[in-house]
Image 1: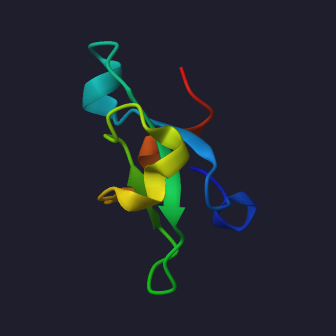
Image 2: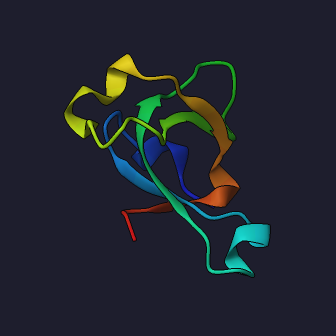
Length: 73
């Protein structure tokens, strides 16, 4: 699991929970928000029509840290 204290807004992450790993599936995203109400998840933007420079204008998903890896695949 990632260390929340080492994450920052705009950082590249790769979402790959166990059921994705089995099939070689993953989703790249950018951290949009590090919430104050949980230490086990962050908000990540995955779908922004490849408009990554404006990712903050897109909807994010609350994502468990255990399902994230640093960097993009």
